[in-house]
Length: 559
DNA sequence: CAAGGTTGCGCG
DNA sequence: AAAGCGCGCAACCTTG
Image (cartoon, rainbow, N blue to C red; front, side):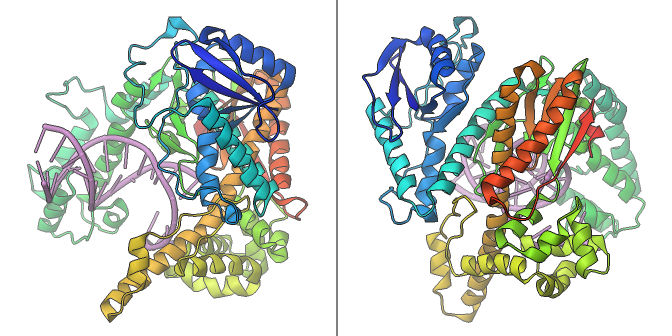
């Protein structure tokens, strides 16, 4: 049922077979660490247990190095903060105050299982923040987590959330291992065409690429200022003001409003500067090797439950360089994204029948537009996103009353979440992820008395209201996406002959790399997984979550 | 000169 | 048109 993995010293590991409550079923099996992959494979084939470990992203890479994969796991470190914060576990004795979750695991590092790949720094990297938990402590924690789920107000939902989060850790590790197919040669060609040849200057005498240099000279000429640095907002602002260009910030969209002849070269320079510093040659050198971009995904790294990433800006691959994300020869990239995920999640959460009707076709915004905005899709989109984000000003603010009249259920749900947040309460997603409680500073501010202080407190309250308003929708959408990903992974594992690999995931979008001949078999799995995710979260609710599936050679052909 | 904050821009 | 949510990162800039 469960199988806990624990490290014993430098050379040994222990396996603890546990029952459905986490109680040891027999004495542990002790084995040399080098034998672990074979044993894991054997047990996996025989019983498909749920592997329990402190942190999947610590254990799993070393197993993947030996070609060992697992179907399911329970990641204690990911489940811990969810249970500690969840509104659903309030009646239980799960400890609310669990210190910062540091990496205090003692999993095998890469090379332990496969000495050929041993890294030089493995020993130095061993974290020392906190003493390692013993197997007994890990087992007790598993039992406590399972008991907490059973005693909670919504065991089925929490169980699903923990399973989806743990599956996310497996997918993240596998995707990191696989990497995003990246053609450095195409990237370099693009850089050269856009920026000019790679500058030769070393670190001591950094040189600008030729096309940036040319724009810089043109800009300085137009402003009659030969020495300022446009990368410095202060210097740029001063130079603009001296030339009579009155702007409050140096943001591109604000600069665009000016007609001054210096603006076009300035905007062009900013664009190139961004490419050069964020995704230029240095980035390529640092992050792409062996034809793959291998970022680190941080599962549950965002308060709402979305993933974050570390290194290389993995979740911000600019449209500009997506042509370098390129399938291998004979392969395709299948790029799938969920259509209007957040509005659909809101519809399901609020059980808004009218909005569900508008969502019947692929384009929800068009449906909304037809029902209440005279067919104006752009207006409908602005209004709906405004409701989810808490917009009060501008066009979207003006459209709110109209939206609320047509969809009282949906708008009522986000309004209620906003009011709860303003009062300092916590709010909770579909599956039971609750937002953090307000800080002590926030609470203190709400108790102030003078008029000046009160204004500040109100501003803080409204800001928190926008956060909680969005949290329930963004967080529930993240849960749908996790389930989608987990369901897709399961289906792909059942069809190994397809040779399909999950290589990228971005909030509401997945990318699969597979042989061209497998595409007809893989594409429907993505849709099936989406339907399964909907069912898991919302049962038979009359709303669907369509996905757009695009088959391309390179990423910029999608969308 | 290292650490931490700010600005600006990329993504959903 | 440029604000309302969530992020990461590079560069600049201030602080100690």
